[in-house]
Image (tube, rainbow, N blue to C red; front, top):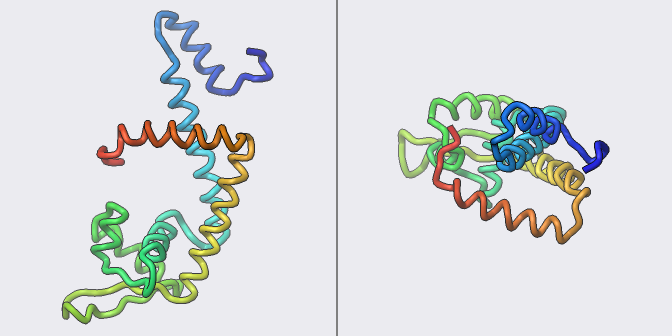
Length: 170
């Protein structure tokens, strides 16, 4: 491999190989690249969503409600389950979204003590724009791959993901 083809992970792997030559470092290189790509793409999306007035947490809540389909109403419990959040972790997010006019809290007609969260038209407009522009950023990142490479990468990552699917994030 020429120095022009090297990336930061190659340089890290070369250092480890120099220091511990007996180690097989292919897995470190692979996961190092996955981690770096994920972090860098996440940073791009975060900057974009910040320009749109959304943090990652608010994006996740609005996306959860939007994906549920019409009438775009979920209970806090349903939202928490989708996002693997405690009810306390959700309350602050709902407060921010309500203050911005993206959602409203309504009494649950089936439970006097319960609430429903309804996405407003403004919230729907904001999340749809955020999803569309986010997809544009993702497509742009994948421009370095051919269609066949994208399909192959997708299949391999799906296979790898299945091995982790039941593990929690934290």
